[in-house]
Length: 333
Image (cartoon, rainbow, N blue to C red; front, top):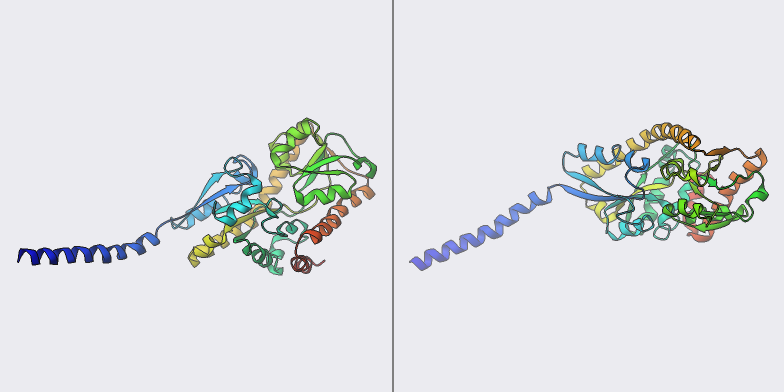
């Protein structure tokens, strides 16, 4: 009798363990989702500190704990040129990084720098869809632009001034692969370089200058060693917000909707923040000794036009023809 009771008890306990554990699973699955994020710049840079409250903090607050994005840091966590691969492989869940830094992972992503459109037009005319299509092939979901601005972002800073086309001959100018064709077309010598190399390389005379944005130029203090700013800006800011595609697909629809809504809100808010910060950075650069150079009109036109003609020609050589044709259709080329 005692043996029978014992057997019954053991069966009941086993049943509880099996079926009870099954009932616990939905509660675990419905818990908080955490996504780790890494950026391409240090935390004190505007691109990091200005964007986190607009995007990350909003999502964390409005998800009511269902989704938490955890900013892990910048280059000290993952090297900027490795971020695209890290998101693709799922080493990190999310990143914000210039598209030119991961062109080997998503061929043609950095063609977004040539866009003549506003971010609203890019969405309406299909650039976002095309970017998502080409990123998906690498296992990445393209969330959107991290730094949409109204005008142009990039400029070249140099150790010595230039005035004529001839002055560019032989200059060594550093930058990521997206910009090297422009430098070569100017008659300069292009040098592939990472952001962290800009200041020390110019200081030591390894190269004569580099391409950069004002926030990075001032943030690194590069005006101390490359004080001559060619005051003719070109190209769009290229940083993009990326998420591992498997992670994106695993999010419930309400959280996908939240991420998309906050991304669009951030795109609307960033241009004003950028314009205010740009005015401040120009003043800081000038106060630090930077000299903003205006080229003669014909030289200025050649300089900027060459950035785009060389950019399109270089991308056409490197990237899939179908993708380039789609970009041209979207951009009205």
